[in-house]
Image 1 (cartoon, rainbow, N blue to C red):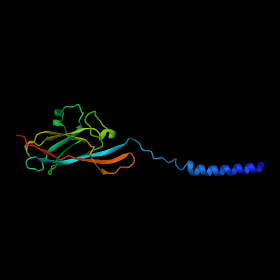
Image 2 (cartoon, rainbow, N blue to C red):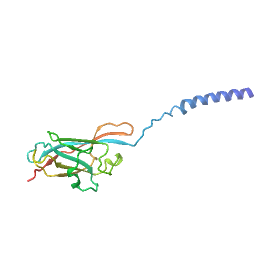
Image 3 (cartoon, rainbow, N blue to C red):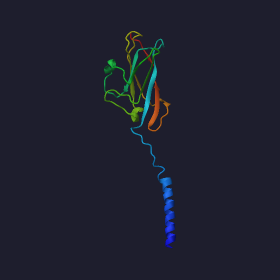
Image 4 (cartoon, rainbow, N blue to C red):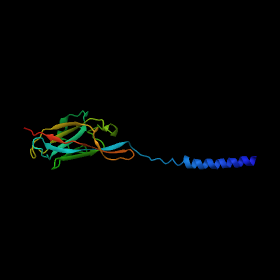
Length: 170
């Protein structure tokens, strides 16, 4: 009887070790990702003259959160950085960022799509290509088009198109 119990115990132990090896340790490999969920946001578009429908080069487009407490006059002499672009000869601009920020205000991915933003548009080349009124365009990313798939914590790239017609100063 003792020999039977010993054999039964050894067989049961061997089966348990095999099952534990098969199921218990096969799922231990986990992928470690550092940081937080994120995505890239692209804003692109064209600046055109409202009267002639011609593209306008030399227009500065600055993006910042609508709730930013800094006054618009602060941005008149602002030098373009990651959240700003100047239109090319075809009137096109493109700004890509994971965050759009000014100063100490930084908004991360989880709030990005719901937040209201402002595009502050100003003519920086004086009368070289016409002299246009400063314009403010409100927008958000709720209707942005997903242009690149993500993987893991990276959610991909979302693109918002802003085509704006500007009026010339009188």
